[in-house]
Amino acid sequence: MSFNRSKIAAPEATTADENYHWNNDIEFAPLRSIDEFLLNKDRYELAPFNDFPKWNNRITSNLLYFQSNYFVSILAFGLFASFIHAKAMAIGFVVLGLIVGLGLFLRSRDPRVIVIRQEHPYAFLAVIVVVLYSFITYLQFVVITLFSIAFPTLLVLIHASLRLRNLMNKVNNSVYKRVSSADKTVMAAIIKVLSRDLRA
Image (tube, rainbow, N blue to C red; front, side):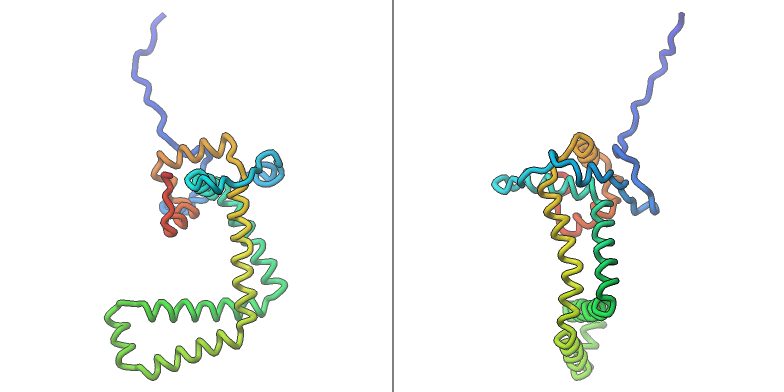
């Protein structure tokens, strides 16, 4: 009996669960089961507040592992809030957009923007007054909009703090440390923007 002595290639490192590919730059992690995400009560434990590196690692790992569940939950809450307070949400987003746009305009170091601010000071002042007036007038709508964003985000962080990592979560986190393509997921990009260390 003869044996094939040809060298067997080692499998390449891949993510433990195949991500959904939007394009070459963006991937979406698969949805986790409702039992794995919420219902298994044995997988909850008080966050280790006295051990920040461990707490940070748990939050980061859960944000990456359950990211699709988190995004769906936030979207569902946002749609529900939009259905209940459609007018308030629409106006709130417009006002917030104006505030963010004005803030970016104020902080911009672009020479063209600086020239506009210098050559049209009164028009620029008028824009500031209009934006501030809109903010004060529709403050209630802005609060509702901010709440619809902040509340589900807070719930996500609480869940990520309390949910213990299971074996699959740890395997995925280990792979995330070794596979560069794992950085293409949406949550990984957000964590990078927030200056989180994915390799912690």
